Amino acid sequence: MPSFHEVVFKGSFNPISQIMDSLTDTLKTFNKVCYNVFQFGNVIMFLIFLFMALNLFLSARETEYKEKINARNLEYLKKRGRIGTTVCIVLAIGFLLKGLSIFFLWCLTPFPTPLVFHWLNINKYYIVDTSLHDIYSYNTLEASVIFFVSILSFAAILMITLSMYLIFFNVRVVHSRLKTFKLLFTGIIIAIVCGLAPGFWLLR
View 1 (cartoon, rainbow, N blue to C red):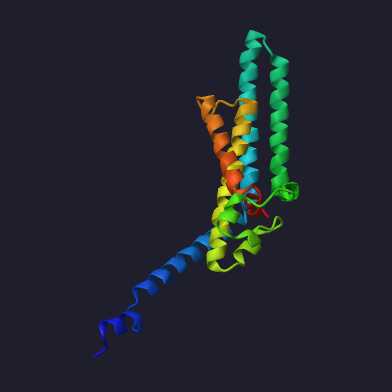
View 2 (spheres, rainbow, N blue to C red):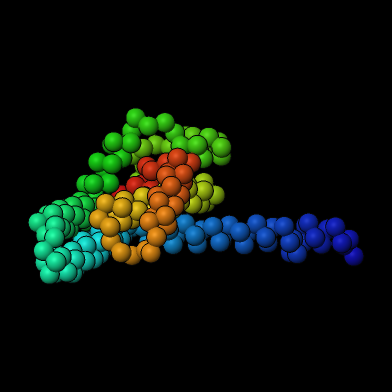
């Protein structure tokens, strides 16, 4: 009769092996979901900026109407609303065509490797022109780590974008400007740690 040791480590019952297999399957699922979702990353950014443009346009129209009654700063408000809406639409189209992601990656080329790549000792994976397909082609664990860092970087891009949008165009989405600046600083901190380039990798 086999001993308990033989059953655990040589037989079919091997909890460590089962845990590792389960973890590997989970990571593979995570990688696949990331790959499938961010295949449409450019569309996601397009919709975000299109929503910003529409929200700004409607907000500007409402503000113009109120200021028209008071006869104050009407031309300034019109100009700001039109400029903001136009910028958001241009950025939306730029992301949809993927040209803007490539441009930003080119601008980020001179910047040093982000801190997290040093901490995790994965500097060799920081290649500015990396694509979504490149990340997915790494082994399971490496791809999961890069995807996770890239998602944090992508979140930083969204935080910085949204906070700048609120600061410059004063859209009344949050009740306190302090919340907007907290959002901006949080995005900047994440960007310093994870970099911005990994976020744009998900859009290519």
